[in-house]
Length: 208
Image 1 (cartoon, helix red, strand yellow):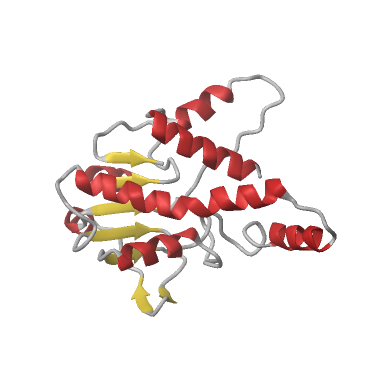
Image 2 (cartoon, rainbow, N blue to C red; image 1 turned 30 degrees about the vertical axis):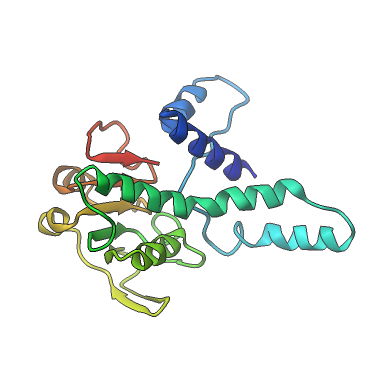
């Protein structure tokens, strides 16, 4: 529910043209009683996206509706579609459509520095982009090969040349080993869903 709240705040801030990351940073200056939660491209792993709905199901079987759990799930479930919308916005700045564009996904594990892809929002983002005609590649040092939704892909290295020939780079998982300075320098359009490029200002960056 905390994640759902901050994701809804991110969606609201996007509509109001406010940087949600600056809002969270400002709120964190409170010297007590504050625990930051951060928005993201969706929920992954085995527990958070799934287990609360077991509780909700059990509550419903007992005649009780767990409305906050259901609402949080609905908000969190919107985030991959929101990211695809940001990719469309980013490409549109250079007069391109998703169809036919080369999109490089950075990170398919559901969180940084692990190899677990269970329920990863990256997979939902990739599937939607593929359905809309994007040409996909991914890079993940922890996931050398990936098979899902009828696709078989292998991780590619992040190089200046690959970044330059990608129409859009999507930072879906902020692995520490990614070369962030190279990504910023050579990426033509970047959708940063994790605030991995915090502190950098550039017209090529679209933040969640």
